[in-house]
Image (cartoon, rainbow, N blue to C red; front, side, top):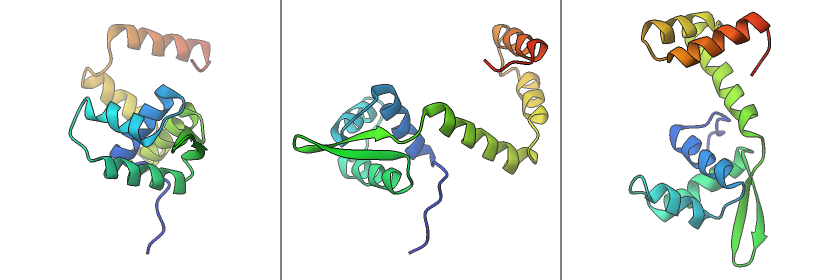
Length: 126
């Protein structure tokens, strides 16, 4: 069996977003939230949450008759790592081509552009 990647897949990220939003969740909690948007098997959610635990993204504890899963790391930390990895893979570590692409493709609203300009001017993070 090959080692699992620490990178989150799209489905894993979707599950993590639910757990971050809820703070703590059982497999059933996550399954029901995902089912509101699309068809998915309960066993798939259970397997994915076990994988996320193995990767170190979730911690579990016994609660009543089910396990309660909590994020092992803050959302900002995980998203930051994903963004850094994306920048490395796609833009050789440079954020400028990403921002240029977003501006040229009109993916940023006027409000977002003003906020980015404000951050650049102040030299601070949000």
